Length: 140
Picture 1 (cartoon, rainbow, N blue to C red):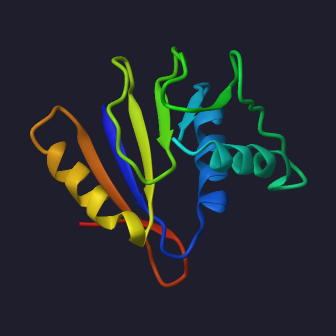
Picture 2 (cartoon, rainbow, N blue to C red):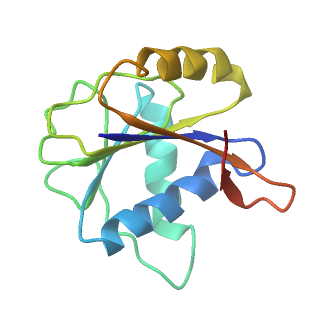
């Protein structure tokens, strides 16, 4: 499994998440977006419909969606790609190939603990931060 840690310093989640979702869909895969906060999921659901006028990102809150926004206890299966968008690391189901973990300065300690906890597991960890121009670069 791969775990990509995205430290949101310049770009808010609402701008970073659609770019990841588009890349996952372009690869022919699907994306499960998880958060414990239903209001956050509602806000992201609304935003994904209108984040860019010239594109369409098929998604929903229920059913078999290319991009599914759900609470962690929802019975969603068959998603090899999972985005953890509320800053909380959580165990992911077997069969998950890639986790996109988004966190900000308020969740930095949680992210560090998750990074350390994954060190002894068969997980390829990558840390992404933004440079001065706002581009994502892989960190040390």
